[in-house]
Length: 146
Image (cartoon, rainbow, N blue to C red; front, top):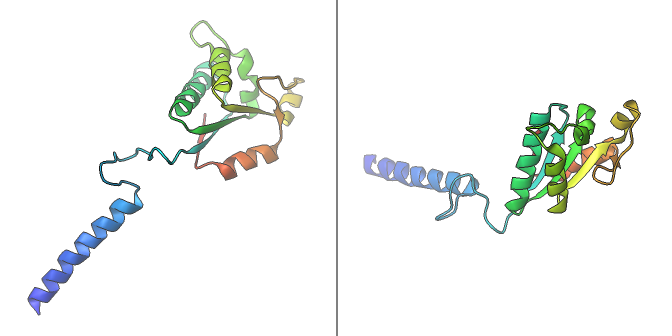
């Protein structure tokens, strides 16, 4: 009986490791945390900061994610709708935003937030609604906030 219990434990441990490794998406030869080439993520980024460095980093990440063949959408909310006016000597935010859009990234600006600032959307950042934000979150595999 003891031998049977030992064999059962070994089989159970092997099965448990197999289940864990396959459920984490780590196939043979695949690095942990690396998405398979055929499986690209949909990433939603919500920018609500008015800090030039923070917004610059959000678009740096967005550009990198596009380079990795992911689909990326950015929603500007609150102070984030001021992103096009945040350029400084160190942080050329608008250049990164244009690069992002030029690579197929999509940018949306909260219409209510723009109206509160007596501003309008632009070609780079068209007006959007809270329903658009909801749709981005619903469709995304991952959502980041900056």
